[in-house]
Image (tube, rainbow, N blue to C red; front, side, top):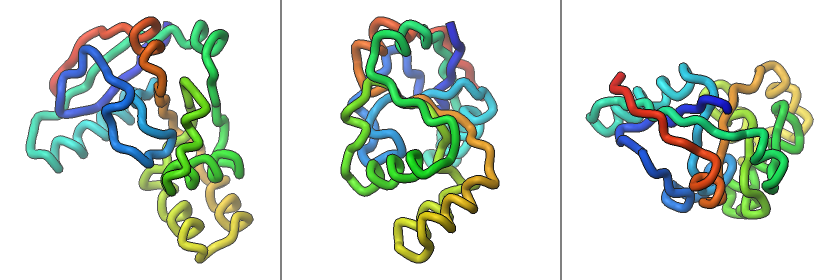
Length: 161
């Protein structure tokens, strides 16, 4: 079992996959990360924007079983495939609809300028990939199938930050 976190301003005991915003990196799903500090940063940013306390929801996920039995996509690097997937989802193509579970790097502050320049046609794919290769991916997991949440994700508590 892998411990994962969801930074928020809300206690989320029973996550719902189709509740979040559309056109995100890996589609409309429930996002977690195995990187505690990344989730804390996200929770603190949300708390500042919403003027609410930052909360860290903790879960255990049976990743190995999911990878064996669900339709999964794992991105190991900021590469052309990742870039195409991110751009497609952010542009409304919903490439994530083909999957139950997607994992890989976040298009966050470190890389979003490059992604936006590429989306606007101001740099080509080669230039974008060269710039992206300078960064090690952090990690996000998007669960797109409610059955995975119901059967393989176990709530383990919420702490106020």
